[in-house]
Length: 577
Image (cartoon, rainbow, N blue to C red; front, top):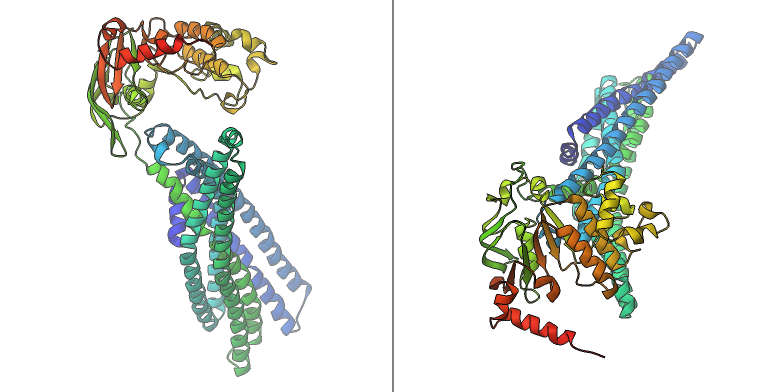
């Protein structure tokens, strides 16, 4: 239990940890004020036994009780406020740390780890810590402190009862330790099933179009229902496994109270304990049960808190790409790769490639599907780190740049565009949040999307659905190009940006790309002949190697992949219905 509490406090930010520590100290004072009820009761009982109840006695007892109630309430209010602030601040800060940490992880992390798990940790897990951990930790701490204070007071009143209480508490903590051990695996399984359920829900929602198209609704529903049932079973199993321990704890505390009452009465009968002390012992036995019972019941959730903390720490402990290098601004944007190789899950994707991309030239990358084209562009822009060789920008290894300094030099337009659930204006100014509206409109006009934006209900203030669901593919592409134009980076990476565009949008999209790529260093992955033939150099990637390189004219004179590529597209273009 105490190791879990320490791990939680270590997980907190220093300022929030101080809040928790302060709230524990205040809880100690609260427990002391709560314990003042015992001398107040003792004072009144003594007066009753001596048949000497006076107005002064009543005022003294009332005064002590008021001090106890007011002091306890005041310290409890302040302690609760501090623990609430500490809990919410901790979770808010950790969410930001997780987001910032995820930003600099290698892209392979998102292939090895399901989106459901990542989302579960950043949402469910952090919500567990936010709503459960704060209260559980403080209830357990305050319960233990209150019990400790009352135990000390009972030892002062009668050391024999104090020893019985200490022995009883040792048994209670042994039972509690067994419960914590039993909950260890169950808590881990519960959170794993939570993650699996989130993953299945995301998969079902994201694939609903395919599910309905291929009439897989029943099958996919069954998969989702299985995940829901497994989650339910994991939660139920955890509760059922812990109930016996919680019952034993409650039973033992009641039995302990009964033992204290019985021993106190026997000691009184034997003449070794006066009546006043006997009555105080009997009353105190119920106070101990109330405080420790809450701490015992809620301590079952500490294991869930512990697993939640470990899950968040696992992500934060995942090694980032080296991002702490120099804030370099390159004078030129010549890109060079020297004998670079890269493997993913022991499968070599890029095998000893060397290339030069001079500043303000266009390099087209073509080749069979799965040949390594996208991986190569990811290595050139340091979405991945190479396993061997070097990639340089302006003669400096890209790993010498801080990540933010490096990314200032690159803009990307992908085949699949992701837009955020925000206004169109904010999606365009994504890289420059403070950019004035005039620059947003200027970029939109260059990207040929101003006209259709103005036809929307609220123009640039129109809020689009998550992922840009309310826009067509061509419209999303042009907005992404406007976003890239706003960034105005010297290197543009186009990853099949025109592959899925309707013919009626193609002319405007090509015009937008022309506006984006003027006077830039361009790296493009393309399957369309018209976007490739004017490139300064063409790289044909096959099996992770450069199979051919040259201009359109030189490659057309060679018998190889490129000429086959061009001829197959010419043949397809000549088809008529």
